Amino acid sequence: MVDEEEMKWPAWLQPLVQTRFFVECKVHANLNKSECNMYCLDCMKGGLCSTCLASHKQHKVIQIRRSSYHDVIRVSEIPKTVDISGVQTYIINSAKIVFLNERPQPRHGKGVTNTCHVCERTILHSFTFCSIGCKIVGTSKKFQKQKKLSEEDGSEGEESSDRKSNKIQSFTPSTPPPYRIAKRRKGIPHRAPMGGSFL
Ligand SMILES: [Zn+2]
Ligand SMILES: [Zn+2]
Ligand SMILES: [Zn+2]
Image 1 (tube, rainbow, N blue to C red):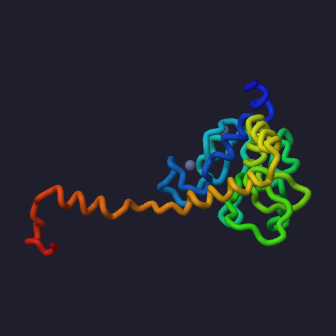
Image 2: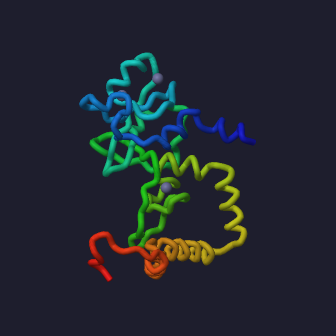
Image 3: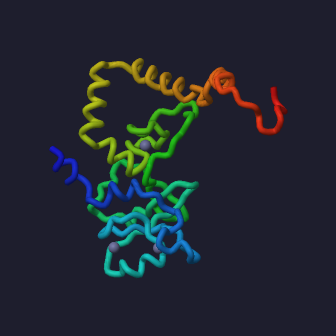
C-alpha cells in the first residue's frame, strides 16, 4: 500500500514542496545573489542558488518564483509526469503558475462557495485544490479515508464545530500566569544586588 502512494507522484515532488526557497545559500552565503530559487529534480537536495547550479548542468532544474511572498512554479516548467489537474492556476506576468503550498487564509469573504478541499482557502469553482501541496495531501489515501469517515458521520455541523475549537485554541494566552513569578521570588531569600531598589 505504501508503494501505491509513492508511485502516484515523482519522487522529487514531495521534497520540492517541503523545501524553503528564497533563503540564503548555505554553501555560497558570502557571494552576492546567493538566494536559493532553483530545485534539481535529479538530486532533490533542497534549494540551489545560481552558483550551485554550475554543478547541476546536466540535470533537470526548475525555477521557483515568488508571488506575494509565496513560492510558485510556472506550469510550463512542470514536467508532464505531475498531474496538476484540479489545482488552481493563476496568470502572473502573463505566465500560468501554480502555488507550491497552501496559503493560510484566516477569514472567508461573504458568499464564498468553493474552497480548497484541504486547507479551505477560497478558490475558483472549477478547481479542487489551491496548490500542489494540498493536492498531494488531498489525494492521499489517509486524507480520503478521513474525509469519507466524516462524511459518513454525515454533518456539516461537525465541520463547523471543528473550526470553532481551532479558534479557541489559538486564542489561548501563551504567557504564564503571574502568580508563579511571585511565588518564586518569595521562595529564594536573597537581596537584590543593587541595594534593594525594588521591594
Ligand atoms: Zn542535480
Ligand atoms: Zn549555492
Ligand atoms: Zn489548499
